[in-house]
Length: 484
Image 1 (cartoon, helix red, strand yellow):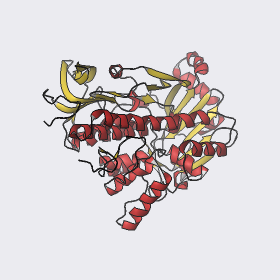
Image 2: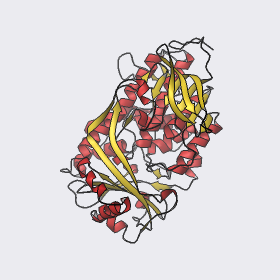
Image 3: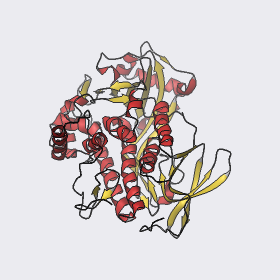
């Protein structure tokens, strides 16, 4: 094993990386590290498939991350509902208003859509893909603590599927086990909860709900009402996910009786959703038969990493789900963390520099969503004011409407692997796309460029002494210097 700064090469490790959590973030990270030839173990507490909330994806995930993972075709063939945009009954406008991803040239063309997915199916696709790419995936294995020596995390202690306590050593541990992580506190620092976003969601599933006319029949609908807002997500021709997100001061309503009755009463207070569900029936059996409650308290960790360990996805931060950003933030952070781990393992750049880059970029993406959501919760505005606010926050050179679509489509950062356009062998077409992405300073477009053309477009450092992505998009490099 080669000597690496920050890594004691004299200590034998069973794996190069142990990833805790098999959701989209953990599957993405483990796959992107394993594809570089590293030994990766993934520990997942549950047995897949399993229910998970958060069914609405963004284009940056579908056309960027899924391409990088090699599952774009499998996801396309899975029969998921296409969403071409979204519909809101929000703000001063009493009538619902919609947006299409195709409004922005960054999403225009044959890939101007995302999917509504049953997370049980989508997450299993990603986890099975990780296994097929060489990741040692072990389900029903619960990480209970980390191993620490001389101030560095050296591995994980876990209970296996038979309840046997085991230890595994690794040079890096990535915690991608979500908001209920048992080991995130070992990173140090506190979890800071937002004073603004302290909501609680109650949700269930229905059959027979109404659909909008095509091509908007698959769009997500978000509708505000006196106590908060509703989501309405069509998962198939028959199945719909419906949830009410209540402000903290309205949470007492959850004590008014059985959850199913509470949800039914809340639906009756939102005319738009009540109309959609007028002829529908709630699912009462199987994995979708339970009415569930989820605290959607937004938070962010004071630290995202320490020597030998990093937090990924919801283990690091969580933001209000209004713009369906959960899977995007999880998989995007996994891409950034994979670059940091791959680079540190190669010994090309010090671990501290690699993870400083990771934390800076992930925090920036989180803050863009947070700041815009604060503005979007101001109900004394119309959609045009929201569009202008998106442009101000992202600093985009596009129109107000395009800026809004870029943000809610998962493209408000500056990443070369996320452009939404069909593959092309034309050198001029590729050059045009790269130049356009440079001009608009758009992270989402950059990740999809990498996914389509197999190499990154490069970028400028975000801060003095910062790093840039390597030509293969899977490492960091110093500006002006080739990656090793």
